[in-house]
Amino acid sequence: MASAPSGGNQRILLKISGEGFAAEGGTTLDIERVRRLAKQLKVLTREGVEVAAVIGGGNILRGAQSEDLGIARATADYMGMLATVINGLALSDALEANGVPSRVMSAIDVHKVCEPFIRRRALRHLEKGRVVILVGGLGSPYFTTDSAAAQRGVELGCDLLLKATMVDGVYDKDPQKHADATLFSSLTFDQVLDQRLQVMDQTAFTLCRENALPIVVFNMAKEKGVIQACHGEKVGTLIST
Image (tube, rainbow, N blue to C red; front, side):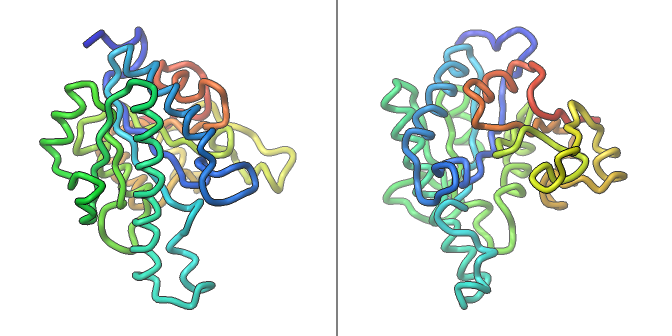
């Protein structure tokens, strides 16, 4: 395997929200967005970067919608986990079409289409240059895919957590509501806490902070956003110790 790019990271955890797989302003699955992401991951794997990706399912269903749906929150969360499997399979297919080997590993039992998540097996896949697509969240209700990303990032020994969103990074206030919102280029974990900035849920953020796992929040709509963030270029917001 080739060496990682200069100034870059050898092993990354990419967190992709389900909304990032949907057409702008829409829902369900935008396969063209998935294909564009697969092409970026192909570049990174060819450079020798080991890639694990935690996939969201919010484009299909979010557990937080349980009240609107009139069903139990735990049931809605399990439905959301199944939605991540759909997105993960789509990404895997797009990667394989680009000549990039991948494995979909699930925290819930769907053995007909996914491998179960086993840490040592996931590490072996990464070492062999396969993109490991992690679906099913943590396999338990009430935990977000942000928490899954932090957990997997730490246990797989990743150098960096890339949080792909639909905004350019972390702002001092909501940029959709405030035209004068300021984008931060970098922050410490303590600054995020002191200023009560919204980066990810508290459980996920605390896990990253306690294990000194840096986070880059960036806009996945940028043409080469994943590549730039992995290379350590100035894109989005870097959060570190």
